Length: 199
Image 1 (cartoon, one colour):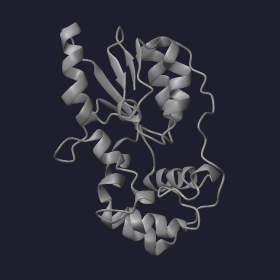
Image 2 (cartoon, helix red, strand yellow; image 1 turned 120 degrees about the vertical axis):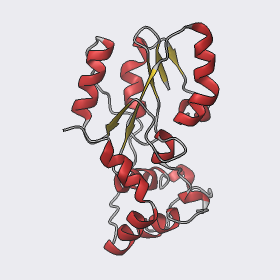
Image 3 (cartoon, helix red, strand yellow; image 1 turned 90 degrees about the vertical axis):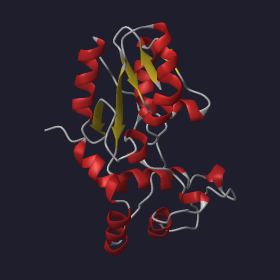
Image 4 (cartoon, helix red, strand yellow; image 1 turned 45 degrees about the horizontal axis):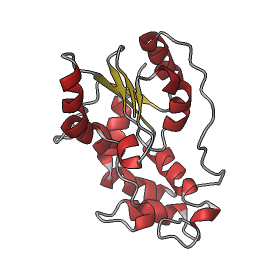
C-alpha cells in the first residue's frame, strides 16, 4: 500500500497485479509505504475502510481517494500458479508443483480450496458488501498506459516501471471446460475486471 498524502490518494496493492513494480517506481514520492507484513501491504478496501481510513481521518479532514489495479482473472490465476510453482516452495502446502493448471483453477473454484489454490479474490479486494466496486479509481492491469498516465498526472511525476517480482516463465494452458467452470463459479471476478476497462 502506498499513501500519497498531499495528493489525497491511496494505492491499494492487489497481489499479482504489478504492485511491486509500481511500489519500486512510486515509493520515493509516497508519504507512507506499507511493505510488511503482507496483511498490511495487501489490505483490501474493506480492511482499509475499517482500520486505516479512520486513523487517517484523525490527521486531516479530507477523505483520501483509493486506487487499485486488477488483472484478467485467467492471467491472474496463471501468475499465482507460476509463482507457487517455484523451487523454494516444493514440499510446501502452497506449492503447485506436480499440479496441472486445470487442476489448480478447478480447485480455486471450490468454496474452500486447498492451500495451493487459496489465493483470494480480486473482486472482494475492491468491492463492498453487495459486490459493488467501491475503490474510487480502478484500472485493468492490461491497460498500463492508462494507469501510468493517470498516476503521472495525479502525482505530477514521470514514471518508469521496473520489472520486479516476476513469476517464473511456464506454459499454463487452460481447457475450455475448466475456463467455462471458472466463468460460472467466479462470474463476479470477470464482471469487476470488465468494469475496470477504460476506452
